[in-house]
Amino acid sequence: MEINWITVSAQVVNFLILVWLLKHFLYQPVIRAMDRRDQKIRNRMDEADSREQEALREKQSYQQKLASFEKEREELLEETRQEARQTRSQMIDQAREETARVRSHWMREVSEEKTAFIDGLRHQSLEVVETVIRKALQDLADERLEERIAHTFIRKLHELDEETREALGRSSEPATIATSFELDPGQRSTLTRAIHELVGADLAVNYTQVPELICGVELTCESQRISWNLSDYLEELTASVEKAFEPLETTEPGA
Amino acid sequence: MTITPDSIVYWQWGDFALNATIVFTWLVMALLTLGSWLVTRGLSEDPKLSRWQNLLEVLVVGIRNQIAQVSHQQPGPYLPFVGTLFLFIAMANLLNVIPGYMAPTGSLSTTTALAICVFVAVPVFGIASKGAGEYLQHYIKPTPLMLPFNVIGEVSRTVALAVRLYGNIMSGTVIVAILLSLTPYFFPVVMQLLGLLTGMIQAYIFAILAMVYIASATSAHEHGESDEHQHNTPSEP
Image 1 (cartoon, rainbow over the protein chains, first blue to last red):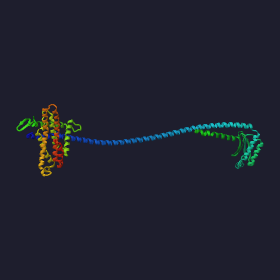
Image 2: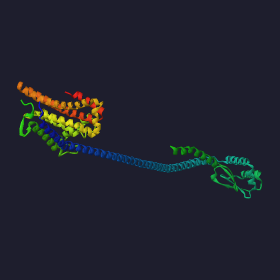
Image 3: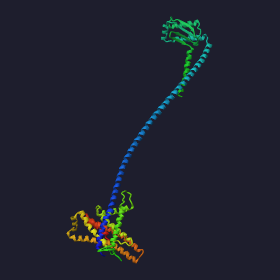
């Protein structure tokens, strides 16, 4: 255990030199490098932060744009849908109208055809009835029947209202009595007398024969016309026949 | 048996003897300086760095953190002095595993030189940070009566510093030498490993104590005093 003071002083110098050397070759460079690296890393972090912020901003703006695009698209789509709906309903309406038109046209045709058919039928049936009745009455016609007809006519004259009687009385033209059969003079005078009793003796009376009247008598004077004949009954028959056909006409279009 | 490398003299010129202590000190210095230079000439400032640079950075950062912990001050001004104490002692002790090498720290001359450096550095740092007046005042605190004790304390702790390091390293070498003659082959290897551990611990203790002394001189007196006690007591071997 000895101390060599020369060695001690040498070692002190050595140590101080080492301190200087290490300071220059170790501590300063290493610390400087670490500081610079720290700074670099911090800069990068800052940069990354700012980039992130920017990216976020851009993302937000893109999202907004996307949302607006989406909205626009939705609006367009809705508009198109609306238009499509309108067009569809228009087309449906048109089709309906067209159908209705065609249908009504067809109905009309059907109804016309039916009417024609019914008319024909009526006409034919009436003709048949008329022919049958005419034939039957012609076969039955004799003086007694003709007398009955004249009587019936006279009764009808008696049933005339006051107004008609006055109109007949004022008439300046002669009255014409048409019959389907030949009146004998006695019957004619009976009739003339009956007329004169009713409307006054001034009215002249002519007689004609019209076979179409079918067992009938008709008095015509100016606008007045008084008659009793089978034609009227036949017309009533026609009317009732037509009435019988009516339900067919009304129900069929709906069917 | 050689106890101290001082006694191995390679070259003599008058009073000056170029002994093993100085030669091996130069060797350690050269290794440290060359190693540092080789690594730091190509320092990378990118996050990607070489393994050697990483090692140096870990060392420097570790020393800085230790200084900051002990002194509660910025480690900047103390780093070269305290860091070099640690690196020099650690390297000198570490090379002990090489046959034929004799640790310069096993010489009382080297440890005395280092202790003297600490002895001088404490007032230098103290005056630099607080000014001469305020620094010198702490010798007469709490009363002027304490002046001789403070001075004695200053000197004795320096002596303790030197002897502690010298004793530990020298004893390690001596124990290995004795064991080699008693039980050769394996047991000395274990003791050599133990010696490595002791060497590293001693390097740490020396540097930390030096820092504690400097911190007590530079910081507020009460604060520094409590710090000294705190760190002194457990590390005293």
